[in-house]
Image (tube, rainbow, N blue to C red; front, side, top):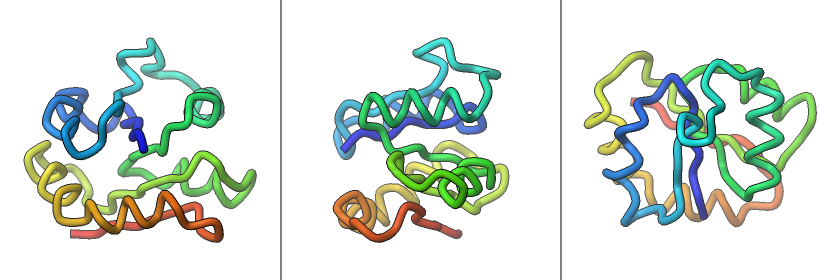
Length: 111
C-alpha cells in the first residue's frame, strides 16, 4: 500500500517512511503542487495511492464521491515532519488494516 502525501505535508517525509510504506510519494514529485484537489484525487485513484493529508478537503471528497482513493486524515494541525513520522509509525498497523477495509474510506489520526 502506497501513501501519497498532500502538499501541506513536507515532501521530506517520503524518505523517512519508505521502509514502512514502500512506493509512497508526495504530490511534489508528480508536479501536482497547487493542483485542484479533484485532480490529485483522480491521480491517487488511478495510481493506487491512499492520500495522507492534514486538512479536511479530501475527507469531504470521500463523502461526495466515495473511495478509492482512501484518505488518512492527520488531525494534527501544523506539526514537525518528525511528529508525523512518529504518528505513522505508531499507527502503522492501523493504516495497513484500514487499507484492507472495504467499508470505510477515511482514517482519522489525532495527536
